[in-house]
Length: 50
Image (tube, rainbow, N blue to C red; front, side, top):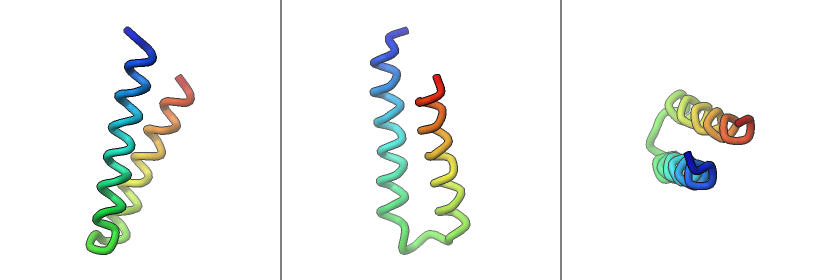
């Protein structure tokens, strides 16, 4: 496995999810936003702990 490819791909996925959350911030419930951001930050944490 190419670690640099993995980090690039995972970073792109997290970026897309955060962008999606930002775009929908005014229409989604606070519970949904909280859960999405919590998962995104867990993904970031996973990248830095591998």
